Image 1 (tube, rainbow, N blue to C red):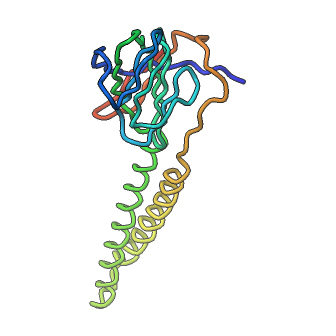
Image 2 (image 1 turned 180 degrees about the vertical axis):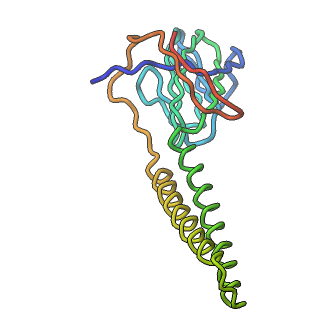
Image 3 (image 1 turned 30 degrees about the horizontal axis):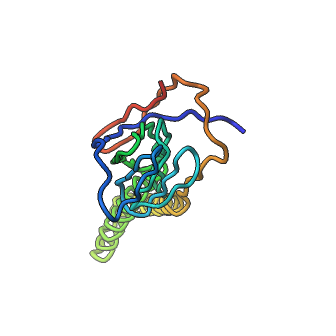
Length: 198
Protein backbone atom coordinates (compact mmCIF):
# COMPACT_ATOMS: atom_id res chain seq x y z
CA UNK A 1 0.00 0.00 0.00
CA UNK A 2 1.26 3.45 -0.87
CA UNK A 3 2.24 5.55 2.11
CA UNK A 4 0.68 9.02 1.92
CA UNK A 5 2.33 12.08 3.48
CA UNK A 6 0.47 13.88 6.22
CA UNK A 7 -0.22 17.48 5.33
CA UNK A 8 0.11 20.02 8.10
CA UNK A 9 -2.97 22.22 8.27
CA UNK A 10 -3.73 25.42 10.07
CA UNK A 11 -4.56 24.32 13.57
CA UNK A 12 -5.75 26.58 16.33
CA UNK A 13 -5.13 25.18 19.78
CA UNK A 14 -7.00 27.36 22.21
CA UNK A 15 -4.90 26.22 25.10
CA UNK A 16 -4.60 23.80 27.91
CA UNK A 17 -6.75 24.17 30.99
CA UNK A 18 -7.78 21.90 33.84
CA UNK A 19 -10.50 19.46 32.82
CA UNK A 20 -14.04 20.82 32.98
CA UNK A 21 -16.20 19.46 35.79
CA UNK A 22 -18.93 16.78 35.60
CA UNK A 23 -19.70 16.24 31.89
CA UNK A 24 -16.07 15.80 30.81
CA UNK A 25 -14.26 12.50 31.16
CA UNK A 26 -11.81 12.37 34.05
CA UNK A 27 -8.36 11.61 32.69
CA UNK A 28 -6.26 8.86 34.22
CA UNK A 29 -2.87 9.88 35.66
CA UNK A 30 -1.19 9.46 32.24
CA UNK A 31 -4.01 10.99 30.20
CA UNK A 32 -5.33 14.37 29.19
CA UNK A 33 -8.66 15.40 27.69
CA UNK A 34 -8.91 16.14 23.98
CA UNK A 35 -11.85 18.24 22.83
CA UNK A 36 -12.47 18.76 19.11
CA UNK A 37 -14.62 21.64 17.93
CA UNK A 38 -15.78 21.37 14.31
CA UNK A 39 -19.25 20.94 12.74
CA UNK A 40 -21.21 18.09 14.35
CA UNK A 41 -20.96 14.69 12.74
CA UNK A 42 -17.28 14.84 11.79
CA UNK A 43 -15.27 11.74 12.66
CA UNK A 44 -12.25 12.03 14.97
CA UNK A 45 -9.35 9.60 14.67
CA UNK A 46 -6.51 9.61 17.22
CA UNK A 47 -3.34 7.82 16.13
CA UNK A 48 -5.19 6.22 13.17
CA UNK A 49 -7.98 4.74 15.32
CA UNK A 50 -11.57 5.97 15.40
CA UNK A 51 -11.99 7.81 18.69
CA UNK A 52 -15.48 9.23 18.23
CA UNK A 53 -17.80 11.67 16.51
CA UNK A 54 -18.08 15.43 17.06
CA UNK A 55 -19.20 16.73 19.55
CA UNK A 56 -16.05 15.10 20.91
CA UNK A 57 -14.34 15.25 24.30
CA UNK A 58 -12.49 12.19 25.58
CA UNK A 59 -9.58 11.09 27.70
CA UNK A 60 -6.52 10.49 25.51
CA UNK A 61 -3.08 9.12 26.33
CA UNK A 62 -0.74 12.03 27.14
CA UNK A 63 2.05 12.83 24.68
CA UNK A 64 2.30 13.56 20.98
CA UNK A 65 -0.87 12.48 19.16
CA UNK A 66 -1.86 12.53 15.52
CA UNK A 67 -5.47 13.63 15.18
CA UNK A 68 -7.47 13.29 11.96
CA UNK A 69 -10.73 15.20 11.61
CA UNK A 70 -12.78 13.81 8.75
CA UNK A 71 -16.14 14.87 7.33
CA UNK A 72 -17.83 14.11 4.03
CA UNK A 73 -17.24 16.75 1.39
CA UNK A 74 -14.17 18.13 3.14
CA UNK A 75 -10.44 17.55 2.83
CA UNK A 76 -8.91 15.36 5.54
CA UNK A 77 -7.45 17.45 8.33
CA UNK A 78 -4.38 15.98 10.05
CA UNK A 79 -3.16 17.71 13.18
CA UNK A 80 -0.18 16.92 15.36
CA UNK A 81 -0.98 17.78 18.99
CA UNK A 82 0.72 17.43 22.34
CA UNK A 83 -1.74 16.17 24.93
CA UNK A 84 -0.70 17.33 28.40
CA UNK A 85 -1.26 14.97 31.32
CA UNK A 86 -4.24 16.01 33.46
CA UNK A 87 -5.16 18.94 31.20
CA UNK A 88 -7.72 19.72 28.47
CA UNK A 89 -6.49 20.39 24.94
CA UNK A 90 -9.01 22.05 22.63
CA UNK A 91 -8.66 21.66 18.86
CA UNK A 92 -10.62 23.96 16.58
CA UNK A 93 -10.00 22.37 13.21
CA UNK A 94 -10.71 24.20 9.99
CA UNK A 95 -12.35 21.81 7.53
CA UNK A 96 -11.87 22.99 3.96
CA UNK A 97 -14.07 21.79 1.11
CA UNK A 98 -12.56 18.97 -0.92
CA UNK A 99 -11.31 19.80 -4.42
CA UNK A 100 -14.06 17.59 -5.83
CA UNK A 101 -16.74 19.51 -3.88
CA UNK A 102 -15.39 22.85 -5.20
CA UNK A 103 -15.41 21.50 -8.77
CA UNK A 104 -18.96 20.20 -8.28
CA UNK A 105 -20.28 23.56 -7.11
CA UNK A 106 -18.46 25.35 -9.95
CA UNK A 107 -19.93 23.02 -12.58
CA UNK A 108 -23.42 23.27 -11.08
CA UNK A 109 -23.23 27.09 -11.21
CA UNK A 110 -21.82 27.07 -14.76
CA UNK A 111 -24.49 24.60 -15.85
CA UNK A 112 -27.27 26.71 -14.37
CA UNK A 113 -25.93 29.82 -16.12
CA UNK A 114 -25.68 27.93 -19.45
CA UNK A 115 -29.25 26.67 -19.17
CA UNK A 116 -30.47 30.20 -18.35
CA UNK A 117 -28.56 31.68 -21.31
CA UNK A 118 -29.94 28.98 -23.63
CA UNK A 119 -33.46 29.76 -22.44
CA UNK A 120 -32.98 33.50 -23.09
CA UNK A 121 -31.55 32.89 -26.60
CA UNK A 122 -34.43 30.51 -27.35
CA UNK A 123 -37.05 33.00 -26.13
CA UNK A 124 -35.57 35.81 -28.25
CA UNK A 125 -35.45 33.54 -31.33
CA UNK A 126 -39.06 32.48 -30.72
CA UNK A 127 -40.19 36.10 -30.39
CA UNK A 128 -38.44 37.03 -33.66
CA UNK A 129 -40.11 34.10 -35.45
CA UNK A 130 -43.55 35.16 -34.16
CA UNK A 131 -42.88 38.73 -35.40
CA UNK A 132 -42.13 37.36 -38.85
CA UNK A 133 -38.46 38.39 -38.79
CA UNK A 134 -36.71 36.36 -41.49
CA UNK A 135 -33.19 37.62 -40.84
CA UNK A 136 -30.20 35.34 -40.30
CA UNK A 137 -30.08 36.33 -36.64
CA UNK A 138 -32.77 33.73 -35.87
CA UNK A 139 -30.43 30.93 -36.93
CA UNK A 140 -27.64 32.39 -34.80
CA UNK A 141 -29.96 32.74 -31.80
CA UNK A 142 -31.29 29.20 -32.24
CA UNK A 143 -27.77 27.82 -32.50
CA UNK A 144 -26.74 29.83 -29.42
CA UNK A 145 -29.76 28.53 -27.51
CA UNK A 146 -28.91 24.95 -28.39
CA UNK A 147 -25.22 25.24 -27.57
CA UNK A 148 -25.66 27.19 -24.33
CA UNK A 149 -28.51 24.98 -23.13
CA UNK A 150 -26.76 21.73 -24.11
CA UNK A 151 -23.40 22.65 -22.59
CA UNK A 152 -25.16 24.02 -19.52
CA UNK A 153 -27.13 20.80 -19.07
CA UNK A 154 -23.96 18.70 -19.48
CA UNK A 155 -22.07 20.84 -16.95
CA UNK A 156 -24.99 20.59 -14.53
CA UNK A 157 -25.14 16.78 -14.82
CA UNK A 158 -21.36 16.36 -14.33
CA UNK A 159 -21.39 18.78 -11.38
CA UNK A 160 -24.27 16.87 -9.80
CA UNK A 161 -22.44 13.56 -10.22
CA UNK A 162 -19.27 15.00 -8.65
CA UNK A 163 -21.31 16.31 -5.74
CA UNK A 164 -23.14 13.02 -5.16
CA UNK A 165 -20.01 10.86 -5.38
CA UNK A 166 -17.78 13.11 -3.25
CA UNK A 167 -17.27 10.60 -0.48
CA UNK A 168 -13.61 10.50 0.51
CA UNK A 169 -12.24 7.31 2.01
CA UNK A 170 -9.90 6.97 4.93
CA UNK A 171 -6.56 5.26 4.54
CA UNK A 172 -6.48 1.60 5.62
CA UNK A 173 -3.07 1.66 7.25
CA UNK A 174 -1.37 4.19 9.49
CA UNK A 175 0.42 6.88 7.54
CA UNK A 176 4.14 7.20 7.87
CA UNK A 177 6.42 10.18 7.99
CA UNK A 178 8.10 9.05 4.74
CA UNK A 179 8.05 11.64 2.01
CA UNK A 180 8.41 14.59 4.39
CA UNK A 181 9.09 17.89 2.75
CA UNK A 182 6.26 17.73 0.21
CA UNK A 183 4.31 20.93 -0.24
CA UNK A 184 1.13 21.61 -2.18
CA UNK A 185 -1.58 24.19 -2.75
CA UNK A 186 -5.24 23.78 -1.87
CA UNK A 187 -8.16 26.05 -2.66
CA UNK A 188 -9.52 27.49 0.56
CA UNK A 189 -11.88 30.23 1.66
CA UNK A 190 -10.53 33.51 0.36
CA UNK A 191 -7.67 32.07 -1.68
CA UNK A 192 -5.07 29.34 -1.79
CA UNK A 193 -3.78 27.44 1.21
CA UNK A 194 -0.20 26.23 1.27
CA UNK A 195 -0.15 22.72 2.70
CA UNK A 196 2.78 20.49 3.30
CA UNK A 197 4.68 18.20 5.55
CA UNK A 198 7.89 19.40 7.04
